[in-house]
Length: 230
Length: 131
Ligand code: SF4
Ligand code: SF4
Ligand code: SF4
Image (cartoon, rainbow over all chains, first blue to last red; front, side, top):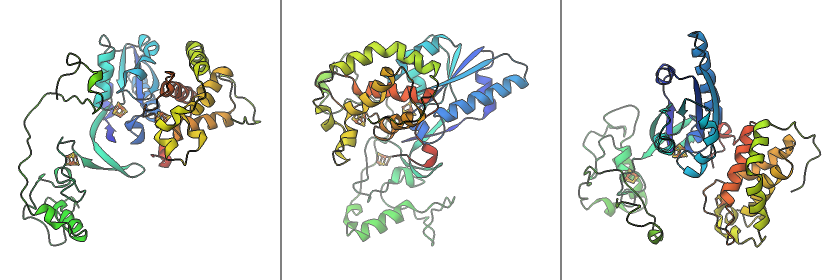
């Protein structure tokens, strides 16, 4: 899922400075799971902002609510009543949720309370690791289920850079292991080393506009006018 | 669903408001449910549960928001706990369930989650229940 972390309180409070009634809107999806923006965290943020406001002698009022997923308009419709009662919204969803909220209520100032970091896995409660950079051309079939784009510091496609440490670490340090050594070792153990012996062409990193996905089988449902090609 | 004998909590104003706003829709939707259980096959949680009937989307809707609406939000903490289990643990709100009659089951379950949140109940992510 998407992993995110709360912005520094000073940055958040300065973005909503000057607004009288603030709604801190939590997301019940990914940012709940990574303990950054669910119900508990949105309540905590509203409390923290109230303390900042009190300390600064401001009469600003904070409240909080949480919707299932801010990236789905069905769930946003549920809070239109609360939206009508506030001057701005502080969203604890990922960047996609913040934008969806802004698009759903274009007259309303919407501010992000989180920094969206990565797509990752849950190692333990409160501990997450990045695993995918959604490159749109997945390599995992050739690389033993280990992503070279994400886990190699240089996102190399055709083997290690030559800086692999004797202990198997990556030369950039930070306690990270060399992704290409891991790829090699796993494929060797599976008897599939041939899968990295042929050269892979470079990734097509060409700039493009925001992508749209129409899932296979749903083509007839969406007209060309509604959805631009990816 | 079997109700517990625990005392019903005082009704929460926000839940009451939700019940007022959505009462008609919930009653109409659940009234239209033919109890055919065809929705069950479209739910991966049901299919992965060894076909446990309490994972059937219609069962989850009826025994969560259906119950909340019927009782106008007056559920005991023990009953809310059962709603939480159905709406959060037994459903991931993937919105894939399909009802041949057109009942919007995920939306109904999402209303139950909203009611739970209003009384301070949600999934225990802190305990690591991330599945
Ligand atoms: S808005 Fe973002 S954080 Fe919330 S469920 Fe959607 S993708 Fe996840
Ligand atoms: S290659 Fe890596 S970054 Fe690209 S889609 Fe696969 S896992 Fe994600
Ligand atoms: S939304 Fe819930 S009930 Fe419907 S298919 Fe997904 S998990 Fe099953």
